[in-house]
Image (cartoon, rainbow, N blue to C red; front, side, top):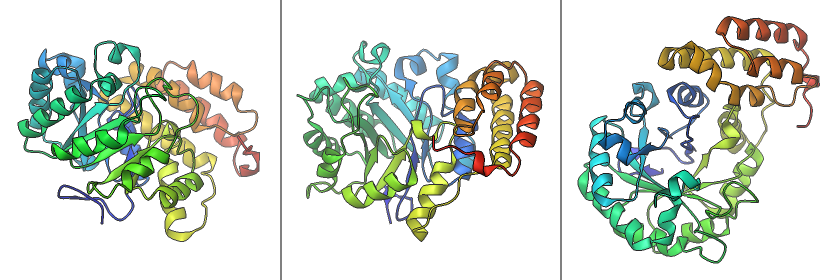
Length: 334
C-alpha cells in the first residue's frame, strides 16, 4: 500500500500532473472517472494568493468528489510561501504540493519553479518553512536539475525528505530541456532505489501509453506514476494503464460514441465552472487530442477548434457520430 502520510493510494497509484490552463476542476473530474488516484490544482502563485488575486483564489476550488486532492503553490520567497501555504491549507485540501519544476521563463525568471534547482539551500529552506507552517502533508514536484551538467536530484531528494516532505514527484528532464528530447528515468530510479529514501517516489515524463507505463513501473520500481501532457484529450490513458497492470491485456481504444460522450461531459462541467465562452475557447487544446488517430478527421477538428458555442460543438459532434459510427477500423496508428 502506497501512502502519503495517512492518505492511502493503493498498490500502484496513478497521479494526474498539475498543468496550467488544463487541470481545472472539469478535467480533473473527467480523469477521476477513469481511475486517477491523486490530483492537484493548477499551480498557484504564492504572490497571487497573498494579494488575493481573483484568478489565484479561483484555482483553490475543487469538488469533494475529487479527493484526495492537493493544492500546488510556487514562489521564491520564504515568507510569501509560508503565507500562501496557510491560505491554501484553509481551502482544506488533502495536502500541499510545492512546485520546484516549472521550466517556463515567466516562472524561473522570478526565481521560482525550476529556478530553485540552482539554489538548493533556498529550495530546502522554503520546503522546511512550509512543512512547519501547515498541519497538512507537504509534497514536492521537481526535475532532475537545471541542465545536463547539473542534475543533483539524488541529493535534493534526501535533503527534502530530511525536512519533512511526505512524497516526491520527479519529472525526468532538466529545466533546460523544457519538454523537449526524451525524459531520463535512470536518475528517478536511482532516487527510488537509494536506501536512504523512505517516502513515495512518483515518476513523471513521457508516459505516453499503458505499455510504457507498466514497463517503466517495473523497470524503475517507482511507487506511482504521474501523467501530464499525454492525458490531454486522452483521459482513457489512466484506465488503460490500470487494466494492463492488473490483467496483462490491453484495452481497445474508446469508440467515437464514448469520445463524444466524454467531450460533452467535459464541456458541460467546464461551463458550470467558468461560463460557455471561456470554456469553449479553452477546450480547443483538448479537441485535437480527443479525436486523434481517426482518419480524415482534420476538417472536423478544424471546425471544433474554431467553434464559438456549445450548440455549434454539439452539431459537429452529431455529424461525427454518424460518419464514424461502427468504424473503429478508421483509427490510424497515430
